[in-house]
Length: 326
Image (cartoon, rainbow, N blue to C red; front, side, top):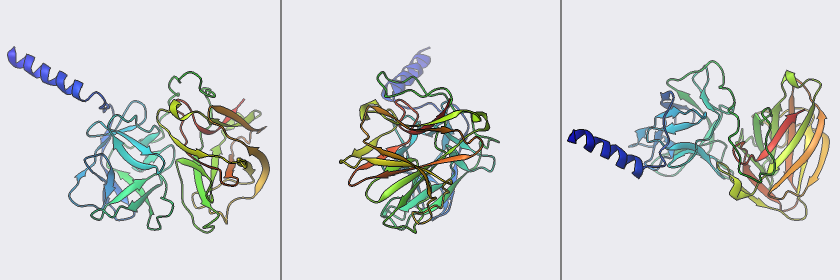
């Protein structure tokens, strides 16, 4: 009896000491990088995921009931703003949309593209959701899991309840961008691949692709930009400054691809106007007849010295570009 009480007390002490540890509720796997230095994805003690660095332990990742990943220490795996570095932090709510596809490739929100960039620390390379601007040695990488394959993506989890005073709530059915591609007018021939962030300013702009389902036939597609205050965000963040120029948006004649550059960007079909973006606001960008079964692509650019970089996220409060069919 004394032994049982001691064990229970030890468990209680552990729970109190680690109130921010996430529960591992699903399938667990290890990851191998295909690209860059290659090899097993390993971890520093602080949860940074790395490849190519000796002396580290292999990372183990488990799915949770919210469609995110936690590591073997119960830390939530996220893309940290503003660089979108993939790491697992104590107390962090895991970035949703993670699963292992039928081919065993780790996927986030329908994208299998990651990037790895050298750290200068014992041969280690960090992993990112998009390349680091100004770091020429970043290379694309795919992350291969040794288990937990699923034949199709998990169903999209409805957004959690939102704090009061969000600029707008998302309906049950909406379209999240399936591809975000940054391009640079300063490096017009360079392909930066995919991103989880929307960025506009300092020569960078972003292309957003939306896959419009067949069920939207005969409906109106409303393009909206949701921009909460920083304090209202739970799993996102942004950097923002604006001069008198604001930001422009345009509908493109054809969709972007993962390799689109500034020089190869699709032509503009409709200029949607200039917008003075202000936090705590929701903006109606455009309303068009839904191109059912096709892709809809929007180009976000900054004017003058305006700048925005945000992690597109549907969690409270939702932030970024969305398409709502009505």
